[in-house]
Length: 181
Image (cartoon, rainbow, N blue to C red; front, top):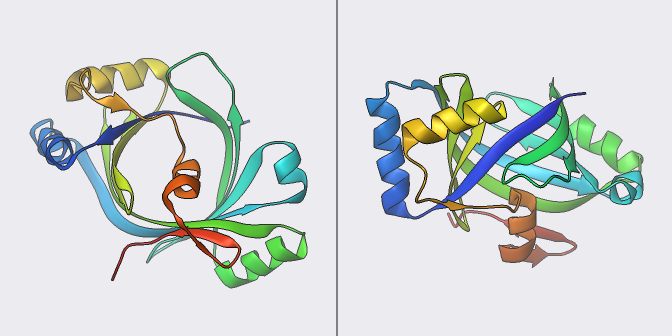
């Protein structure tokens, strides 16, 4: 079973820019920048077990991901995560719909990814705010937090889908959070 362990921070523009500069000063490995469209599916057994399936589209790759939150008393989010790259996103969406799952949420994200020690650090811009995520083992997250001096940053406990549900706009039966073009 794959377990995703991460801590998320809500940032203002000044903090976002300062962290971007800090990552450069730390000579963090820049892994790339992506624009993502994330489509969250629910219904049926997913609702019963409090899980979701996500289709993530970028310019170069597409992924299908299953996520189920693990309740814990830590200030770090943990969830079961199974993910695979897919080649045909339209066919995958039709398969999910044929299985009785329905589009629930859509959110867009601009993401810059870095490797810091043994963690993945992402700087994310969504229509409803700026965020940083640090993903890795709990001890490695703590080390990255020390290097990035995160002690004054506000921890965000909600997932992007939950934030989309709160801040997005209803379009038919789907809640969407998209950038204004």
